[in-house]
Image 1 (cartoon, rainbow, N blue to C red):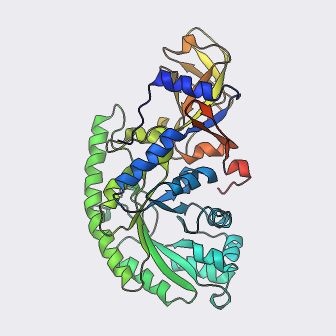
Image 2: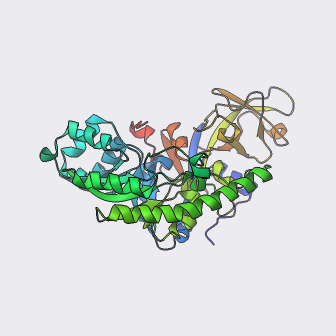
Image 3: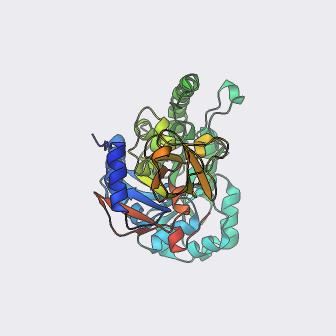
Length: 405
């Protein structure tokens, strides 16, 4: 009900009209699709709050827009300096840092400001991280700092001989979670307020890879097994941690698992971010596919041969394993593809396919990025499209001079 249907030719015409006054390269966010995705994700969360994953947005204006949508609350940031900045700017008063930090300057800033200390929650999975904080600012010389435990959500079947998922926290079983919770509770200057378990093998792995039916079936089988195992383990871990602290939140999931994660009784909130932009990696999901909202445009600058058109730039490659899925995809006009021998180039990208012959020098080609927030690292602003017009541009983190990673 929240999906925005878009005919490719109509969409191309609308984006071209809205940005006719601009010279590529530039990036846009279609606010109609963005808002529809925000509503769909909140609906899938079934009443549990959705926390914005800032890594997938990297634009203060759009993070704030998501936070004004019903069902959204709080930000999951990717670095401590970013969290401090977002709180100081008034974007949020509830920032959970998704990863442990060793940034001493940022820790000193956090410890030196009671307002920041009340708004920011640090992620830990090892007492060595607490030691580092204490080395920066002794417990008696700072406000109490909020702490969240990172529970590893990977699946380890066959007695641990097989690892399915990413390698994050060393805290995997409920006993380890309880032991770390006891250690945090015993440390002066810290308050344990949350637990997070990000099931990347479910939330971040598409279960319907194109033209790979056997792999898709294997992924779905693994995801079902992982989900069943995590339901029991996360519940036991939460119980073990609550023996030592009153938890304010238990966070889990991502765009690809909002509905499944919110169905876990142990989880009190879910996280999403990529689904607001709808990058190409999420085209490979069966349960829910966001409406593409973020695009970037490049100009055709040459016609090297019949059936080919070359655009300036477009080599905006996504992080992760070095494979085709991380390449940007030319989507408008429909019927374009990258050339295997060259891929997406730093300065030029040749395109072929049935639409290439109709392109002329000066025409725009619209691409989608493989991931979400990484698009914002290539531009200073995102042009916000409403109907057939582009309103005021929204500065990206890069445009505000903020490069956090």
